[in-house]
Structures are given as structure tokens and as C-alpha cells.
Length: 216
Image 1 (cartoon, rainbow, N blue to C red):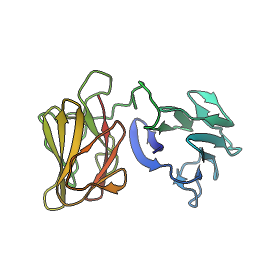
Image 2 (cartoon, one colour):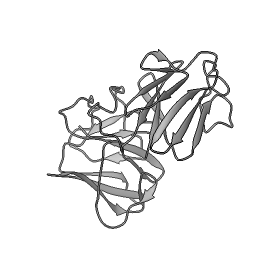
Image 3 (tube, rainbow, N blue to C red):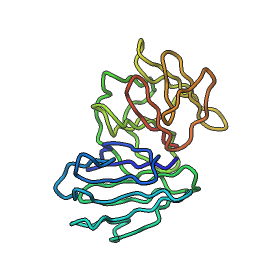
Image 4 (cartoon, rainbow, N blue to C red):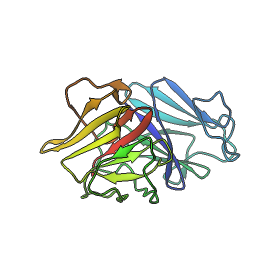
């Protein structure tokens, strides 16, 4: 399912799944994606889903909408396109498209893991994205939003005991996730008792905390 990752100054602010035929972005509170900044017009841009394609449309914004540094009025988005609106960067992700481009080149500054989430790993320091390293979990919400933690161990448990805990396991074919205690959502859908394969860009939610799986 197509999705957008909104960031500023290398920190991810929100992740939005594109589920409607038309999704609007702007400063006004009635937009589907609200960015409260004066550089963003009240109704700045819209995303149109037409079949399997997603088109970006600039809604006559004051400061313009850019894709990869080029001003656009209407643009067919492809996986990993970066949309620039003021100082904000919105990355378009579509798992249905085949792409070898890393999902993100952003590296968030080091920060402590928030109390609402624990990550049991042999190395909890943020690791840069880049091609040959291990897979990682990127925090999307909470005080640690933007942090990236490498999955060095064969099994890494995530979550908070007593609330929700899941296990991410490295296998020869890739990574899988399975709930241990409490509910675990994968891309908005509850995971049953069977382990489910993870794909680059998948979003997990445990106890209200959202995080993203990034393939190394």
C-alpha cells in the first residue's frame, strides 16, 4: 500500500498510508495531512490514487511543490521519490513497485529509547542506512522518533512487557515478526499467532508506539 513519510531536519514526524482516492496536504486543520508551518499553504498539495498509480498535484501553493529539486504542478510518483515542501521532506513509498533505491538516506541523531518502548538488541546505537548493513527498526512516534536500531541478533524483542511484546527473527529468507504478548499491528492489521514475513517499509505498532522495518 502506498505511504508517505514526513520529515524535517532528518527527523521523521509522521507516516501516512494513502487509502483514499484523494488525500490533501496543507496547513489548514481539515487537510488529511496537516503541516502547521507558514511555508505551507492552507491547501498546498493533493495525492490522487488512480488505479495502481499515485499522482501528486500542487494546488497553486504560494511556495511551490518540488520533487527531487524540480518544481512540479502534476507528477506521477515513483517509489522513493522525495517531495519537498518548504523545509519539510515527504518520501513516497510503494511496496508494489520494485526499487533498489534505499528507502531513506536520513540518519537521525543519537537519542535514548523512550520508556514506552524497549529494544533488546546487542547494539542499540543508531546505524546509518546504506545497503550492506543489517536490517533495522526506525521509530516513527514517541520521544525517540527518528531513531534507527540495527537488528544484529537473530531474535530481537520489541515492545513493553505487560503492554505488548513481539519478536523480530532473522531467517535465511529474510525477517519475520510474531507477537509474544498483547496485540501487534502490521500496516494497520492485527497479526495472528503465526509469524509474518517483513518487507522493507512495513509499519509495526505495539501499545500505541509505531515503528518501521527497514531492510539493510
